[in-house]
Length: 111
Image 1: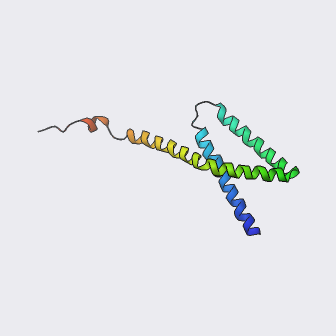
Image 2: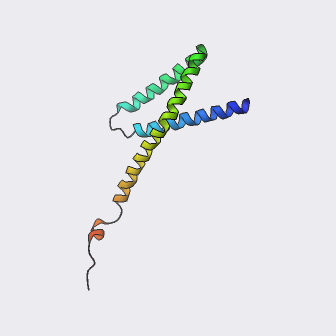
């Protein structure tokens, strides 16, 4: 029982970390300043609300945790695709800037 609980807890923690860090990567690409602090406040409220529900309404907490896990399973591939798109764009920016453009477009000189 303890091993099963440890595996489930570790899997849930890893999934939550991937969800949070992946969403932060996408949020940080936004040029406006409001999404960062809104996401931070929402995370704080979710933690406090989750602890409150776990202590006083465990069945509600269980239902909300199942909903969160389902949402995480549905959103993680979408977040991963967004992260790949961002890193691909950054890679193309650096690849485009490689080398001297004048040497790439010039024709060899006959001697």
